[in-house]
Length: 224
Image 1 (tube, rainbow, N blue to C red):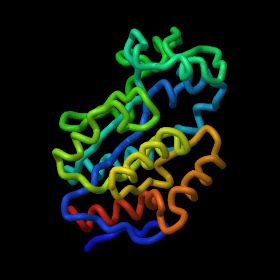
Image 2 (cartoon, rainbow, N blue to C red; image 1 turned 180 degrees about the vertical axis):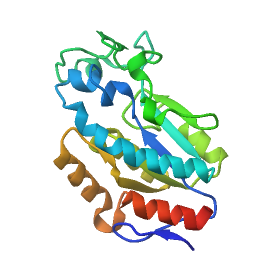
Image 3 (cartoon, helix red, strand yellow; image 1 turned 135 degrees about the vertical axis):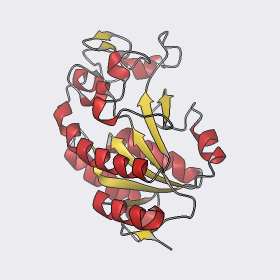
């Protein structure tokens, strides 16, 4: 059996390939003028993982392995956005307010689209999610069940919020999860390290982690 050199132990690759789940690499979080910046964050910190995700994504495409993209997005009428979420943090601009790239975190707006470097292509799944986790109020579980996918490889932003939440959801549902250490970032770099340490603690209580080079090498050997 092929496996990835990972923490806290080797991540065994199944016969039915894993899916790459790219979390929330949308303009609202990664580019200036979006929701992330409205919270006072330095969005340039998230750009560091873009080349890594691009490289892993290219391998998944070359090997014809499943790819899923998510966006945190709300309906234009905000009926799926609780007021407690909209008001949390007293941001300069709230969810649904008009920003330089359209209404913040609203489905269909320019800022809510995946960044140009990682745009989904035909055959890849794109999911709009109203919560932090990708399973909440989305068709993700159904999609994975239909494809008999049991293993998930995660990338995206931010490590401690939407990536971690989705990995914890996946763990509760019985999926074997792995996060790409250099394929995820946070507005707070120390949060990234701490979050990954928590995920892999106690024998991988939530999942595993590995560097992109080790993941690419193992995928090519297993499915190439």
